[in-house]
Image: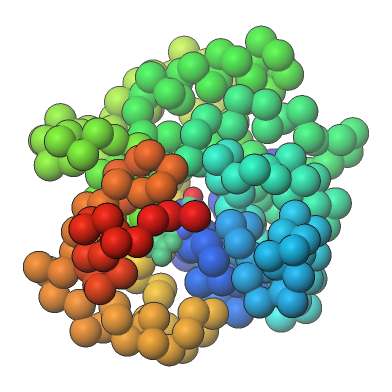
Length: 290
Ligand SMILES: Cc1cc2nc3c(=O)[nH]c(=O)nc-3n(C[C@H](O)[C@H](O)[C@H](O)COP(=O)(O)O)c2cc1C
């Protein structure tokens, strides 16, 4: 297993982290394919057990079992670097983190809330790297302070997710298009906010932008700003290696710009989604989240 974050980043031949996509979109298939190409492949923990027979009656155990299985499957398929994405908002967050650490996962990426206590799960000798997802310099600074104070530990890197990301968004809906919240600005804000925590002689905490990064020139733009890598998710959905159903992939291929909508997700955050009949029915109050 890799010792330091610096070594881990050096080992990458592609400066790309594949963003975790829940409910079975990024499982062992996509994660191992990305890792084999020299990026970091990420298995999403959110409802990873969607196909388990007891997912309704015994969801906590079903998801833990499925997460461990997906990590093992991915390990069998690659010698590359693997991560898991575990959202703070998940009810069984602790169990999933413990399961991933038990499986000696290289990286845990955690957002949808601030993972204030994540370092407490690291046991003696554990090499798993911890990467919180933030959407502001303020959040990054608060997390550094808290981790340093309580665990004498600084984040191994930050994913900085901007307003153009797919899925849940850490912004008010009305701020999404404001220039002051552009990903470029947020990256600089995070660099500045965490610089005070990088002691003399030690390198900066690596910053990894995410959200709307799609092409090689997008990646280059952020590397030029000082990013160590980028996180990309939507770009991988329509690959044959992606674990999603072919109909899900087809929806992405067929989507036009006008179909991309901002919804209020059941967890109370805005989210970027592709409009469909289900969302229309939710909007009209005909369907309720459960
Ligand atoms: C279908 C889908 C599912 C996602 N699921 C998760 C998730 O479970 N946890 C999470 O932290 N982020 C999730 N994300 C966000 C991605 O990991 C990533 O940070 C974001 O989509 C980056 O923006 P991009 O899609 O424009 O590349 C999801 C994104 C998509 C498109």
